[in-house]
Length: 158
Image (cartoon, rainbow, N blue to C red; front, side, top):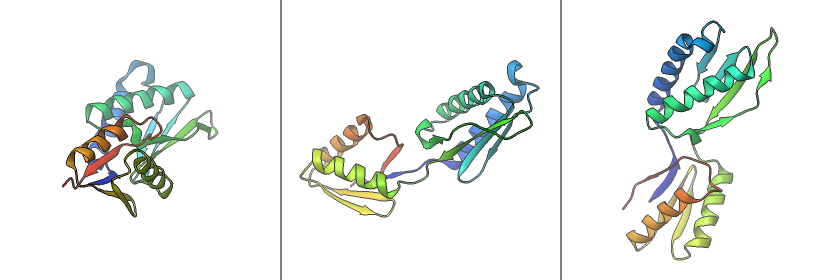
């Protein structure tokens, strides 16, 4: 079984487009000149106040959940002032496991399931076990683990 982080970027694009449309039509955000920009690596929200950024972020989360995207793929940075009575927030998209998280997840699995073999393959973890039931237990365990705040994707299940 392989463990990694992945999401459908097209669905993310659609969620951001829906957010833009709703922000333009919503009464409290209508004439506030809100800008939402999606790039390959992050989402930038520019508005007139922190409250408007929080409102837009709430809409983004709602639209993502409607499209079966996990909010865990969003890594919010602090809201910064950019002048002209405007503020912006960058939200990084988590597209892959970094080395720190792969080591952390590997350690958690090794401590909890000593019989399985865990191999780090770049941005994924490969877990092998003789028992399919044990692999399923690992999936349930990792989804319930509070210290892992990542949208883990389980694939190559054999």
